[in-house]
Image (cartoon, rainbow, N blue to C red; front, side, top):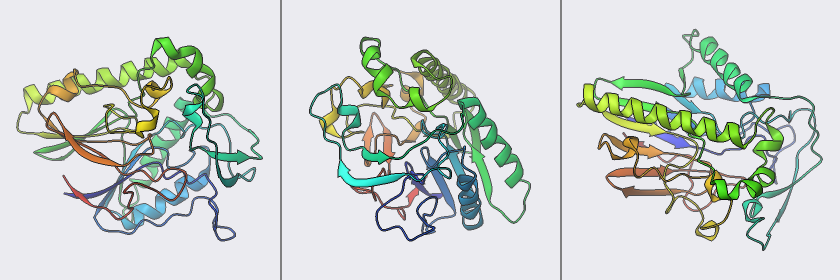
Length: 303
């Protein structure tokens, strides 16, 4: 099975040089394989243009796998206000502000309606039901703690995998993470509870497959990173916001079972492809610009 894996397209962001009328939710993915995986932060589920864009992909690809990111449930409707992005970067020097380093400068943003994680998931679930009843479109696989058996020997597991926030840094994280300001009814306690639920599901599902179906290989798709070293820009190492982006799962069943051959993720805006403990760790992230450090929309990998 060949697949293109991308994340963090951020279609809600206006980019320099965009043609009039094509500032948002216009991004062409060259078709190089039958299958496409979108691993979070593609756009805002509160904006119907995300779903229009996804329909276009379903006309091009046989299967589209979709994992929700942390920005998907943003409470701001891009259609209502222009999102003006300058070409200057914020470059904070203090470690407390380093979470915002290399983020684009954003102006004229007005919140007009609220969106919760549950509402976002409901919209994606309803979209999946709708498009999967249309024989002219490819299959939309919404990976929300979901197991998808590709074949008798290959299973894909997917969830957001919210990270495990470091309790020692909660004061900083509570005001520095935009998730807590832009997602309705969302706080550090909810963030951590979602992490525990995602991790418990991954551990139990991988363990069950390993024990009951040992002939299966497992591929895992998440938004947040499952390991630390090599999955983000080294300049953020040991910063107080690091735990919001990645969690070290090296001692967890989902990592040590020997059944997971590939783990692909997003969120860190850092592309990588390496092996750790027998697991191929892969990301292909566009980020807020036009991609850097090896990002390629037409890259294909074999599962």
